[in-house]
Amino acid sequence: MSQDDLALAIRRAGKESGEPNDCAKRNVQRWESGKVLNPRPVYARALERVTGLPIEALGFAPPGPNARAAESAVLNGREPEQREAAKARAATAPGGIAPMTKHNDHGTLSGIWLSRYEYHSSGRESDFIGEHYVVVLQHGNKLTARSLPEGSSNPNSPLTLDLTVEGNVVTGTWREETARDGYYAGAVYHGAIQLLVEPTGRKMSGKWVGFGKDFDVNTGPWELTFKDASTSKPTMAEYNRSPGE
Image (cartoon, rainbow, N blue to C red; front, top):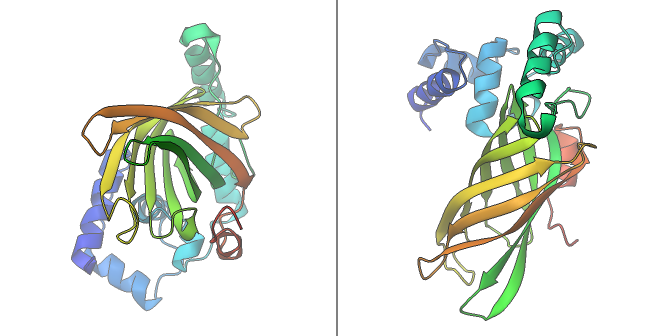
């Protein structure tokens, strides 16, 4: 992206998340030059949404403990008004399922997860498994997941997930670009996904829906298993490898 394009993407991300911002090219220039080491929180959250990476991995200083604690308190309904709202949502949710957002030290589902889905290849008449280590970031009820560059069982097949959390139900879309030198020769596939978060917060399980090579609609199981709450550079480097290694 150019600096203008990135600024535009950040404004769009803010608007979509309900946190409008006035990011301009000059903001991007100040970040890239190092003149600003700690972007305002509204910019930092939009940057994470656009890039799919934690703010620390973008070269900025991590948010202070007080900022993390404040965000965690709001997300988990520990402040009186949020707590009452959470109770109301739980009372009206199907089956009385209470909202589940607390997971790690950040108070969210953010962290490193192992994504695993199953699919049938009609051309090869066999079932296969796709695995990716993904960086999951949560802001409010929105989740983004981006695979690590080398963290895939199928090299050069980046995976992205854009999800919304409602109680213990996670719903959204997925997109994968297959490797150009692989069986699917660089084809891009996308579809919908719905998962249920287990009470432990350590696994999300459900199914995907998407079109196949012959343009038929397929489905299959998909699960994400928690690996690490940290999204620091050293942790991402540790998981930037094939899940089978």
